[in-house]
Image 1 (tube, rainbow, N blue to C red):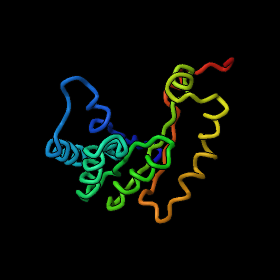
Image 2: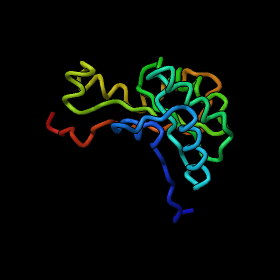
Image 3: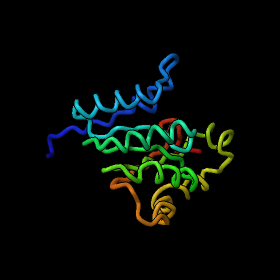
Image 4: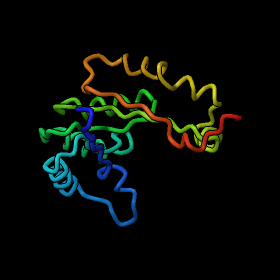
Length: 155
């Protein structure tokens, strides 16, 4: 398996952020089916805490019984993780994709958090929050810092 390339597709979540590219539920399910037929390994179906519509679409994709792992995006907030857990509870294979913004502009103006506070949210401390959920519906957990390329060691 060392030569295997894993395909992680974000069309159903990130693709919808392009102007004029929003999809209704039926279209999302059709795209998910095609992605699965193409052999995509992971389908990031949405951000369940963002809206009721996103929650329902992640749940619906998870209910399709696809071969792909179904992924839900979440901030490090307990409410986000809970929404993702509920949306993925019936998926055959689920993945929790947690992020936190790390760039100075996000820290200062969006999150209003210090660098030290952000670091407390990152693994291994971030995993403590995830472990609080019994019967986790996901087999995989991913964690990333958003805009880490804009972070500077000197700050």
